[in-house]
Length: 312
Length: 183
Image (cartoon, rainbow over all chains, first blue to last red; front, top):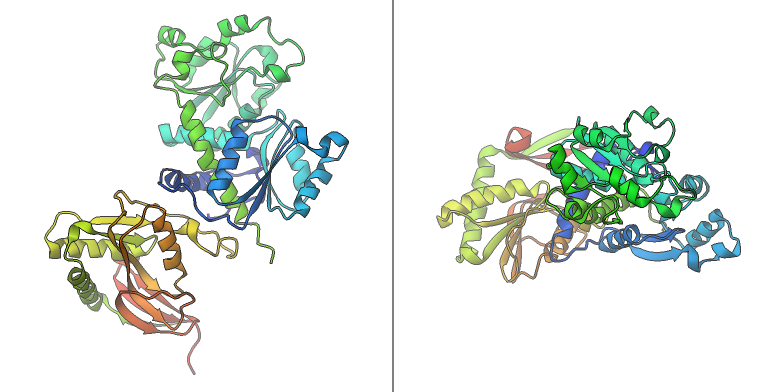
């Protein structure tokens, strides 16, 4: 297969295993490019991409922008704080205004789940979801799985644990879809207040006891506690959360599981969900995740742009 | 579809031998010389050249790289089928070297243009030459000419030339396919 089955990347739910594998194969090539003296190829030199961020982001925005520039695309950035959204413009209007300036691809982050889907139904261009509320964050899941595949090879049957604030996490949902499509077994673990109801209907194992969960897994993906999304208190104190669900070398040594692979989508709250010795330890692939982010986003942009025909 | 054999296995081997000696004639200093073959199909010719030149120069290794040009093509978004990129392997510096670029068929010249651009991302070679097994004359869209040619073929645009290699096509040979029957 040489083509994605979709025109947009709205979520991992909407794409197939073959799509994921095509993105990985293409990302392998871009990773090569990123290790050359000149880290840039001219593929998208006639493509214009708008990064439309209605929510703060450092890493994802930087990573997308770098990916776009390394593909030679023209890039315009738009953030909600400096826009007419504040003046009462609707989402479709805002984006249509951007498209009127001849933009081919829109990369969007939005606080509302489904915003990208809505946009894909109402405007005529390729949409890439860079995170929509607590729904999906597909490129993060792709780069997570890509980094894991680099470390472990085929993911079929691998046991992967996602820990923390599953309720508010788009990374968790996209990761579950992506890892399951690649044949891995996924479990989630966290305080019951931070686990969505009926999460087991997605086919994931649910652990409330962090120690039991660690005994089960080969890879652990530690999520950040998203205090900014928590409108009520879900656990008594951060200190108590750390004691129950914080990962440290001491805990892994006690369980005899020092070979577990450590992932984190960032930003890290050191000393809360993960201690520094683990985050910077030899089994941590946290910085590989960041590095692979650019290659994965280049692959997604390249494959989707290839389907947008040039306007003559 | 009609087909005509242009080069059979034996003749192809002679041609490859000749090409190797022509390269040797021009490049007596093997240390400053390198071969870069264009992916995907130039690499079969490239590997054969390396084999032969190792024997001729009587050396253990020759600088050899394989270059993927997919991201440098000028028809991205203009073709219906997306192309799958291949691997680039270039583990030596091309800076200041004499480079021989290798591909199987020279047609419009656009692939070679993309190859030159892709190669220059790795450094600034001293001198670049081009070797092709088949030169489809009269069909060039860019001003590109080979320095070493296996065979020059005059074909019209609805005919295709296919170079088959034992690695994936069972046998080494060059065939001309015509899509329309001649009157």
